[in-house]
Amino acid sequence: MGGDFGASPLVEGALWALKERDFSLVLIGNKTILDPLIPVDMANKVQIVHCEDFIAMDDGATAALKRKDSSIYLAMEMLKNKEVDAVVSAGHSGATMSLATLKIGRLKGISRPAICTLMPRIDGNKSLIIDAGANVDCKPENLFEFGIMGYEYAKWILKYPKVRIGLLANGEEECKGNENTKAAMEILRNHPSFIGNIEGNNIFDSSVEVVVCDGFVGNVVLKTSEGVADSIIHLLKQYIKSSLIGTFGALFMRGVFKKLKKQIDYAEYGGAPLLGIDGNVIICHGKSNAKAMKNAIFQAISTIENSINDKILSALQLHKMPTK
Image (cartoon, rainbow, N blue to C red; front, side, top):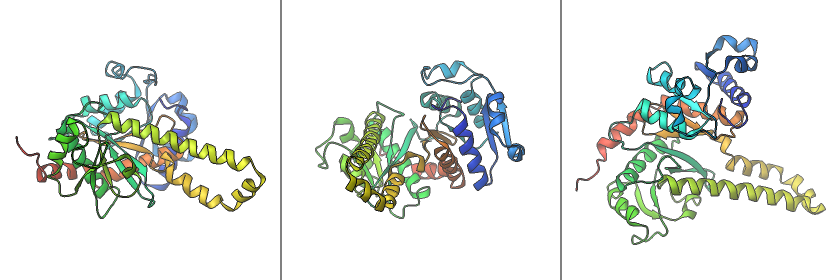
């Protein structure tokens, strides 16, 4: 209910996913709004849990903890009570993270959950950034845990045969970075797939699969990259329209532009998993369209089918943090 464009595109995407995959769909929100969005022939496949309250984007994240009749609160209650296997939300991300952490709880051995998001690479694959906004202040041990979780997600969900972990810093040399990243590097060395410090350009050049950073840096990288991508597309359209040759040439480049758009479109992967909680939660962009919601649901199903939390727990036992 809390997405930028209301319930309609989110319900459309959820129904689209239901047509392609076999799962049980539960919609939580105002029944008066949701009911008309569901075709008669699909009504028996969808359960609606009615509630009239929802957390708006301009509400504070802590408001969700008190508003027990809101849609995101009820969703987390259902996840906690095992009535659903995953929650997918395009609403208030702060409220979703807070409720997931406090009501569902963390995995044993994880001190802070983290959001992981995907970025385009020049080889057509994706690199995974963790954390992308859940924790603005991190300790070295948090970054170590992010590396563990990111590796398991890249291996089991993204299906990369080889996963390399890099620590985002202001230079590749070991002497670069702040005190936090330097300390994190010493811990991350214990993971056999850790390759050391990486720079911002390495996110895109196919030299690494998992990019570890705190949520402040990760979110800035994410929003900056989205802005650059939008600006490039906007400028391309302007330059093409500014000349007859450009307009004519664009007719022959439609396939190329279509591939480029697909590579940088957030809707292609749908949402960002909140890793480290004892459940499955996918956080979507507020401006998610139907395609984004469909793919976010597929991502949630994949985390369940691949038992990603069990994989993380096993990895934490295998790669224990060294004692001081």
